[in-house]
Length: 222
Image 1 (spheres, rainbow, N blue to C red):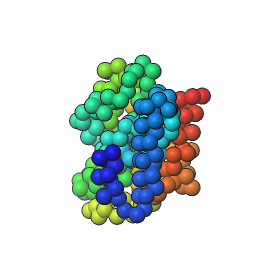
Image 2: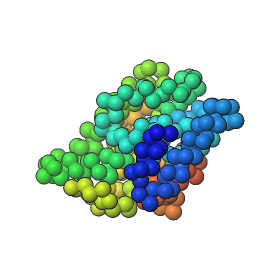
Image 3: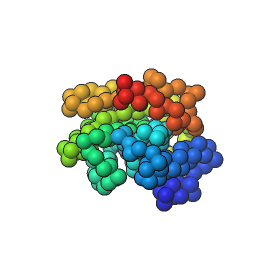
Image 4: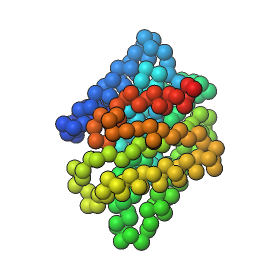
């Protein structure tokens, strides 16, 4: 709840939709813990985009505005304490949108375009997959979810460099392709719902409504 209140203070009016998802997720968590709802088997570990998959069959494990690039250096294990049965649970990672929207392009411009977008994405995916492998190694069933399509949010936070929506979408597609390839190489389950997400399903300019959970569920409960 503390994290939710911190976010509330930082939020702008356009983030009201996301805030509603965060509170919905908290209510579902409470109902799961007191037995009104069953304990979930799907755990969505991620940044704020994880809340788009809020559902009574899932639990959101929110790690704040984390980047995929730095995830390996974070103590991810401490966020998995609510998982009571490793064998039954599946942890679905959803990180990378922040990297694709902000940091990869910033590094590209800082290098005066000497470091290619492909190289920078590969670097990020490498670090991200290392973090997933680390969690798998301690006994968890893991999967990686595709990065959601880039939205039309302008540079509201005043970053020095901020790519056009077209460029952000290009970076996102490269990221998903390289993530899929890395997951295949390391035998990590990759769930791709990128093409199923459309602008009319958005709750704001970068997040999606919780109704998109059905696309994820179709891969878990065929």
